[in-house]
Length: 137
Image (cartoon, rainbow, N blue to C red; front, top):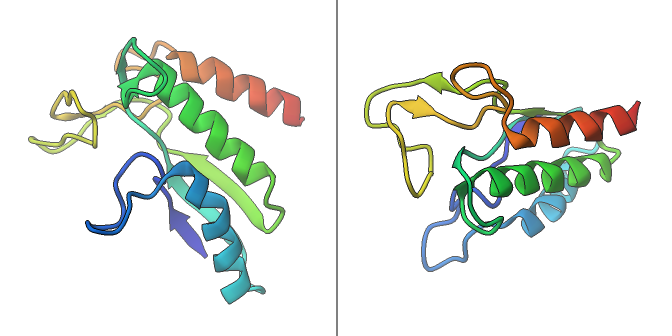
């Protein structure tokens, strides 16, 4: 069972329901496992855009992307019924005109959820993800 999850990046629920947050991810994975206990579960896509410096609490910053990925990977690692998780994406890339990607300061037509920028240079989140995976070896 593959799930795309952007808890804490895209809003998710429509008003008046509250916005989905990273804190909702663990309970969501637990509920999927409860409903489908014999199904293999995989997070097929998750990520956050990063195009600039700024506060960790500000969507679209390198610090936000780094924290977002660290938190999601930590949650994934703490759920043994989750068989894997794939960060979206390795490198920033061009998409359809008008794409905003959920970034408060969008840069259409580019998706900036990559660990590498458009020129292939690592963003700060790259180094954090590398550290996490090396520690898991």
